[in-house]
Image (tube, rainbow, N blue to C red; front, side):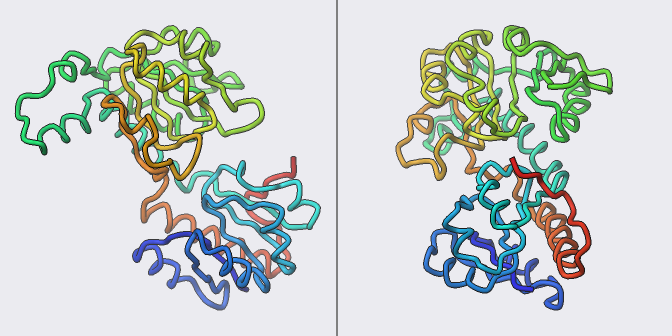
Amino acid sequence: MKAVLPYDASPGTKRLLEGLDPAIARVTVLAENDAAGLARELADADVLLHVLAPVTASVLDAAPKLRLVQKIGIGVDTIDRVHAAKRGVAVCNMPGTNTVAVAELTLALMFAALRRVTALDAGLRAGNWTPDAVHLDMAGELDGACVGLIGYGAVARRLRPVLEALGARVVVYARNTPDDGAKSLPLDVLLTQADIVSLHVPATAETRGLLNAPRIARMKKGAVLVNTARGALIDEAALIAALSTGHLGAAGLDVFAQEPLPHGNALLKLPNVVATPHIAWMTPGTWRRSLAVVAENCRRLASGAPLLHRVAAP
């Protein structure tokens, strides 16, 4: 069974891919921007392994034999699921494979934003042993802070006990009442209480622009915003304005409204922003867990068994 992965895989990831049993799946790896190569390899592909490059109707139509789009991760907002359904192509994701990695980078961004790590690091590398006083005056701690988790799926559930162990008070905004005792609040109430707001919801028609200008204005002065979910959840212009004026103290961002993030984006010019290039999920551990799902779904596809984590068409 032929699988195609349009992704700039690291040497370590390529070694993991080479470890797949070729009797189950033979994976062809392409550069993410190699459109001609992708069209060529999709001509006889059974499976498309999807990371971030959008799976559009034209991509699907270039693959007449395609039977499965396997998302490496959870979010399927970059897959044209309507067209996939018309073509009879299954769409599956991988809940749980990247939970550990995303939770840990979320926590790292919280600490880095609270303590102005990147600005202090840049200053020290420039020869400034005495930091700008603003970074010291704006430094925060998790101990005693109120952390608001917007969305309460696997990542947020993993973070909550860690944050509480560090002395934070955790409140959540969730579609359904939490079944584990977490304190749930309406979104607009959570925003007024939280010293740190962390986003953990998918990008859907309902959640795009969830943190718009009025909601960002409701947040506490000096609050920290962390986003390892999707850039579309935030009105980026409103975020830049709030960070520039000091209404928000800092932000830790792994995802952005436009990806790749354009050179010169205003967010990267702000000293109170810590940014990473949509890599919260990306660890060797995540890849090992993900490839186990790939192998199992390829086995199931070959045998006609029900696929793991099939996502219904919208």
